[in-house]
Image 1 (cartoon, rainbow, N blue to C red):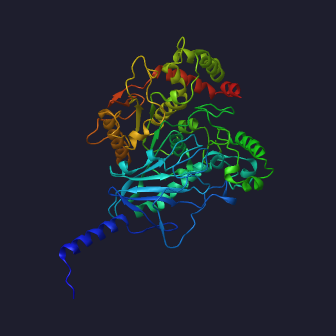
Image 2: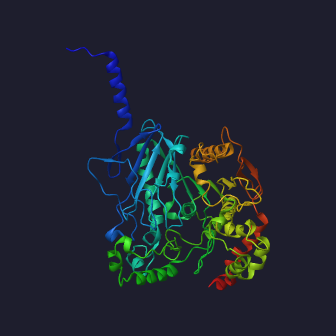
Image 3: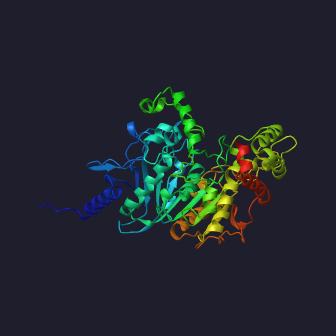
Length: 520
């Protein structure tokens, strides 16, 4: 028998160990077995199906059970994103209901808290394959990270009388939200196989993803699927309105069905069957609120969320919510003082003068003080109302933040006086601040690390506090404390509180008969 050199044997064993480490054992999930990869000490799975492809007769229907497969399915690359305008890193397809997992678990018997990401994009765009959403840095802080895809645009949210008629609940639209719910049900059924704890699931999202988080918190269809919620620049507490505006985006089912009929006519389809036959990339884009936004359907979203929260009718979990200091700069604000004044009067009617005083325009410019009206109508008032309503109607903890991390721009710079724009906090939360970038500062890296720690602590404990980060007080009506992310994490008052109260009088008026009649 030939003698084996012990050094060669040792080297071969190392090679085998590395090869094995890069190919973890298959994991059985609903549908079959999947095999991921090992990356940076994590097991990573990309492109796991959680529902049947929503194509053909399943277009504009609630997600159906995942189709089974034989053998081991490689889960080593992102699936195509949902159909949408523009491009995504992983392409796009109507067959889009897939999710991804980053797990630090060492065995399948581990029970690690789970953080589930819901992307933004105005309910018209978005993809889990966006590099900013890669979950390895958060997972390395001791949580399992999952990112869920959902249908966007008209394929995700089209309402139509014929669609409602064929539905057992006699409703239509909100398919994208139902996709998220199906993904969360998959997590409940399967995440233990990845070392995750299905009893310790927290959902988080930004922009439309944050708005979706608030909707899931209010939806009876999502009850019991998560125990914590984080919303970054998102909430849906404005009243319904036939002509929608940021912060008043919601239509009721009958209004959305009319918009759906107009959409079908634009597509040249005389029947629902004809509409389903049109290839996905040939459908009218319709990337607007009329056919591309969730609606109050009485089923997924039972009613105006503000009213639901006032009555305590929501899924009560701890929440961590907040927004950025200069969201308004990202949404094409009026270019001249005259345009700003005109648009304010058009939207706010009898409250315009008070709001123009609270959010003043410059003599020859539209400064941040004026942009903040859009910021607060769409994001600031939404999260502030959410925090106040929950602090009043629930014993669950509320944590509130304000992200204001940005360079100090010189006085002669076009960005002088600017703050943090919409979505700027995402790369901080996910830990994707590049230390090699010459514009990155030590405070950027410190803020990013603190936010990742707060977010993962909240996932583990229902509270962001812990070792190595400043104390974050619970928000309450008597102590409306806000965590500021600006150079260092520090506690301060509610930003623009007086202006928010003026805006609040408008939203309150919109809910009385006079305000409802005016909006029509």
